[in-house]
Length: 337
Image (cartoon, rainbow, N blue to C red; front, side):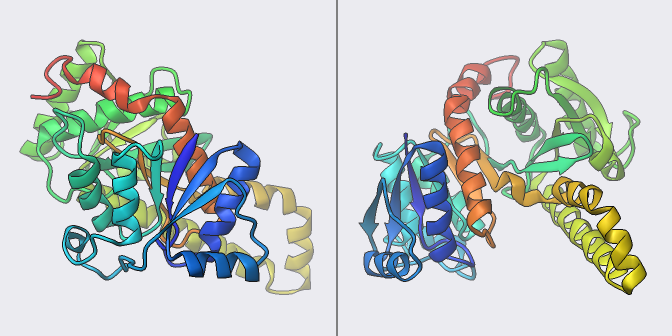
């Protein structure tokens, strides 16, 4: 298996990207194509003792920054590490592409270079997020600010396929983010989406469980949380922010004095378990669902372990043959209408 990596995408590139790739090669036995400035990659590798075993380098000097307009990937930044990596994927030089870089540019580049599966209205970010007793997929997590009801119906189908094939969840439960659990809650948009998801449930395409309030997401039994990208991105960022806040507050409490420090030692295993449960970095980032070939968005501030986890998720995506599953299900019950 060969995975193409944007070596200069993200806040901690290229060092943490290279370290994450080295860990993934050692642990998963894959090959990697690094796209970026070859001289800097080799210098960084040498200075930090990061071995580039089973990695080849495709040289390019350009980089898309986090502040660049997304459209620049198709204009002034056509030779950037992100754009070049996407073209390599399109040309069949690898089985998937991963970048921790500019999210908007990655979505635009993926759409126009790799291209969407025929019939898919919009591709979607689909991060895997921890919750009580497991994890869930949030789709869309921020790729589409404005959506039509049929798009969310496709998000539900794609998310269900991913959770089943890549994450091993039997009959994933789908929930629609709304301001209440009752069927009549929300506006015309939510009502239309609800009807489409109910129809897909009746047709046996998805396992729809109804509306889901944001406060219930962390403790619910829902596996696929469906919403538009604007709402989804707010949910995701608030989720991450609250997790960081809770851990920070607990750290201050337990390091306040000798008594609380002693108490923290007694609770060490429980605290570690809580930290692990709240750590979104365990899953590395988000697949971009709906594309002809696998593209994965790693967290922008990825350190090596986070990026390695993103590679692990990408391997699961490839092995689950998610793209083919989406194609096979598109013509069912009007999801491509």
